[in-house]
Figure (cartoon, rainbow, N blue to C red):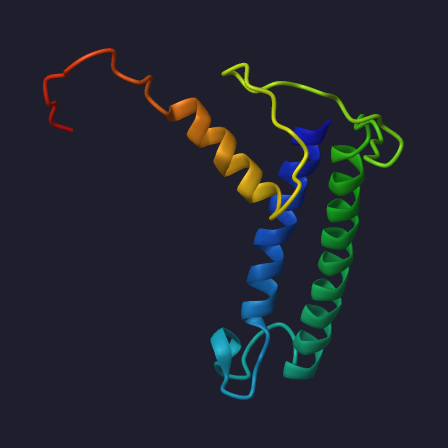
Amino acid sequence: MQTVVIVIHLMIVAVMIGAVLLQKSEGGGLGMGGGAGFMSSRGTANLLSRTTAILAAGFFLTSLFLSWYAGYNRAPSSIIGQPASQTQPAGGAPISAPTSGGILDTLKKADEQQQAPAAPSGPQVPRSQ
């Protein structure tokens, strides 16, 4: 269903781009040329304006449908009514509530605790990094 609407949407977009480019602008645009043709310049302008308006309405409707369809099965969620889950980081060290500074300082301290190497038990060979 969604694929069909996307294909229709893209076809509307392609035709609408062509209709807009064919319209006569102040500089002439792609619609410039002689007066020869099956319609007068005023009739062509009216036809292209109506076609553009119809295509724009179709583009708008297909966009709304695709937006609605994307959120159709999405379950509503709120962070207000949910209890806070107490999870521990992978290292197993619990993160305490910040007493001073902020959450970034607390996370930095926890990260430093996890990455701090164990105190060497004796002399160590220097390693290059």
